[in-house]
Structures are given as structure tokens and as C-alpha cells.
Image (cartoon, rainbow, N blue to C red; front, side, top):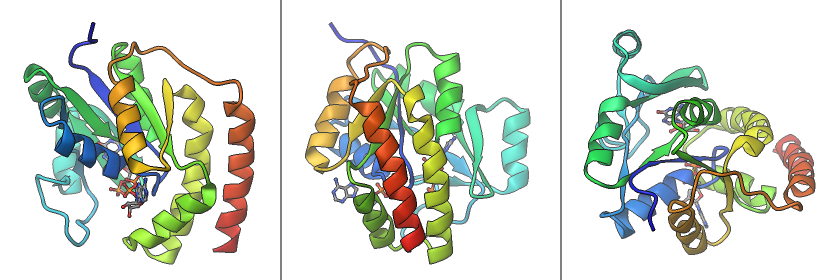
Length: 213
Ligand code: ADP
Ligand code: 5GP
């Protein structure tokens, strides 16, 4: 039995791999997953296309959208606004596919509250050094932005216990298949007793890495 079309939220600290996993799922399983294109007030990065990666809106367009109730959820990140459009989500669900949301933890909490069928997944590599290496290696942020993102990562990882599932993104194919599998499972919280001690150590190690940058 399948769970039927639903919202699948992918959250991760910056560099955790949520964008890569969402893109791979859409490419490999276009009949099962659609992707909601968020609106944001941030500037496009090199290689990003309006309407494909994000809808790049001005702050006044965004606030008008908020006032008109166009957003399923919205939040601030790095001084910019980001939000999921209800219309996008509805269109994908109506087509019979799951809708992938690549959103930060406050947005994920809003979705969890308003849709008990939605599944929220927290993604991160097992080794905090790998997280930092991938973030640096992506080359899309300055050193200062990376430091800020890592500081925020520590708060975000602390929120991970609120997510239904954790998926480790070490090997990309395994992580993609894990998200595919759990997307068909009920929105219950599944936790391994070893997870919490692991998480504590992860936070300590990540903070060390951040100071070393
Ligand atoms: P996020 O969207 O969570 O910030 P990205 O998807 O942009 O993270 O991934 C950060 C960087 O790590 C990107 O350069 C991406 O290509 C790389 N990456 C993601 N997952 C893996 C993986 N499993 N193995 C190796 N590199 C990865
Ligand atoms: P970036 O600027 O790196 O593309 O995204 C910054 C953060 O904003 C990421 O954690 C990303 O998941 C999150 N984000 C992107 N779109 C949305 C959205 O529509 N809503 C929320 N709440 N967060 C989003």
C-alpha cells in the first residue's frame, strides 16, 4: 500500500546535500516526485535560473504574497525571505506525485504543524568535516557567509530531533534511495537510540571545525 501523494520536506544544514538529493530524485523518478520552486528575496547565484531554481522576487512582491496568503510557509534565512507557494504544491499533488520541499527548519516546523500527512526528513553527512568540506567545495559563498551558515547549522542540527526521519548523506545513491523508501512510510517519528549521543558529538566536532576555518 502506498501513502498517496504527499509533501516530503528535505531540510539540512547548508552543505548537507538537500538540493542535490532533491534534484537527483526528480531526475530519476519524475513520475513520483515534483519539486516546489520557492520564492526568495535573495539574489540569484551564478547558474541559477528564475522560475527553475527559485522565483526571485523583490521584498515588496514577497510581502504582497504573504498578505494575500500565497505561502504555505515562509521564513527568514541569512537576512532574506524564502517561502513555499501553495499553488505550486497543489499543482504537483494534483498530478499524483509527491512534492519535494527543500526548506530550512522553521519552514519544516510550519509544514509539520499544518499537515499531519507530510513527512519531514533531516539530511546530513555522518562526518561534520565532510559537511564543512562540501560547503567550502561548493564555492558559492564567501568565507564569512560560510562561517555564518555553520553557526546556523549548529542551531539547525539541534532542531533535528523534531524531524520524522534522519537520512545520512554519505554516499549520494544510498541517500537518494533512502529518501525514496521513507517517502512511502507513515509520518511517524523513527529514532535509533544511538542517534542522540551521535548528535551530541556531532555538534561538538562541528563547532571545532567552524573555529578552525
Ligand atoms: P544543500 O542544498 O543542503 O546546501 P548541496 O546539495 O548544495 O547542499 O550540497 C553541497 C555540496 O556537496 C554540493 O557541491 C554537492 O555537489 C555536494 N554533495 C552533496 N551530496 C554529496 C554526496 N553524497 N557526495 C559527495 N558530494 C556531495
Ligand atoms: P540558499 O540561499 O542556500 O538557496 O537557501 C538557504 C536556505 O533557505 C536553505 O536552508 C533552503 O533549504 C532554505 N529555503 C529555500 N527555499 C525555502 C522556502 O521556500 N521556505 C523556507 N522556509 N526555506 C527555504
